[in-house]
Amino acid sequence: QIMIDCLADPWSIQVILVVGMFGGLIGLMIRSGGSNAFSSLLQKRIKTKKGAMRMTWLIGILIFFDDYFNALTNGAVMRQVNDNYGISREKTSYIVDSTAVGITLLAPISSWVAFTCGLIAESFQSEGIAMDSFSAFVQCIPFNFYCWAAILGTLLISAGIIPHFGPMRAAEKRALEEGKILADGAMPLISNELENIKLKLRNALRTMLGLDAIINLESPNTLQRFEGKAKRVTDNRKK
Image (cartoon, rainbow, N blue to C red; front, side, top):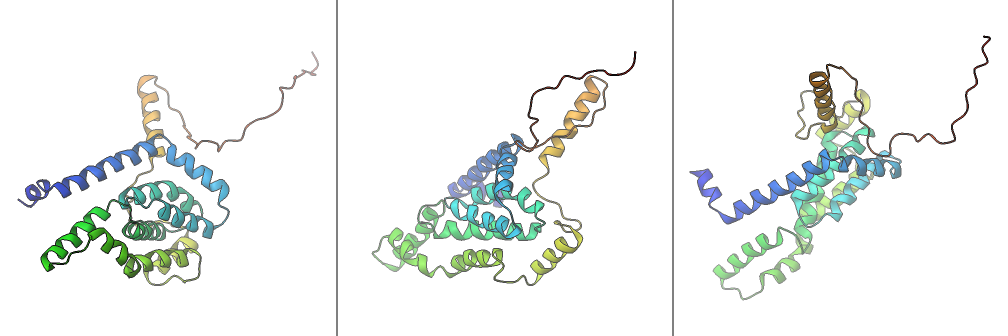
């Protein structure tokens, strides 16, 4: 009955459709190699571990119109970059999630504005307050202390100004000393798409041609280009 009531609610249906469409778009971007290409481009410009964390924070701020799209896009793009710099998945997840939620609730143009204004309008109506709900939302932005603390906190932690503490400190210590960006027993929600594609190609060759091959897939612009003209090879061996 709970599921039926949820599916009968227009807002719930809208959330399900939005998440489904955004998730499909991100999945298509990952499978097509778009996220890997963008990650490769960023890796050429990012030179330090702090730079990788700051870029994760910046992307989270720029995608302000929807928190779901923000988290899915930022996670897909920056996951490989942060992994290469030995940043624990816990820290990457913290930066992605905190910036996505914080900026979406502060931006006056986002998918959550209509929902928030609806709650404000309902409260105003019950209390007999004659005020525009959107104006009230805008005036409340400076007092949304949680969002401001989330955004500023992730920036200060990314810059190394605020030291790690609690479980985050243990996760970063594990990544630094043991080289484990994932905790033992962790099951990431996003799988390694390249590894899955390599396995499918290898199985297809084995099934159709009877060949077993080692397949290496590389991201765009990661292989060295061989330059120069072909040289003539002369056989100087005695005949």
